[in-house]
Length: 90
Ligand code: SF4
Image (tube, rainbow, N blue to C red):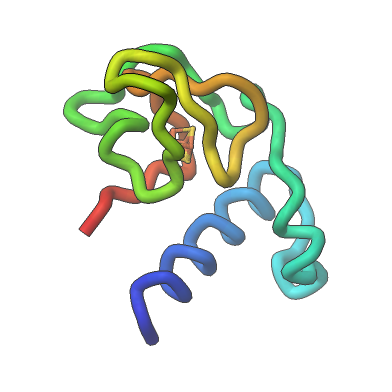
């Protein structure tokens, strides 16, 4: 199983758990919809050494300190943030 498939499955499982929806009923299209920050326990601060800037789901903003976006969580995302779907870049 390649890394992006593993990441997809890990994130899908986390989202399914957060939404109490069995992952087997989620299509890729349903997965493409972003989830609310609260559902993923998003916070604007790191969790230990884990932060959005080192997460493979993070899409950087215009500078290293500017907010970016996330492939999973909706809204503006701090590079110093964190959520349950954190997946370290390999
Ligand atoms: S930690 Fe969560 S909010 Fe931050 S980039 Fe990763 S998946 Fe998105």
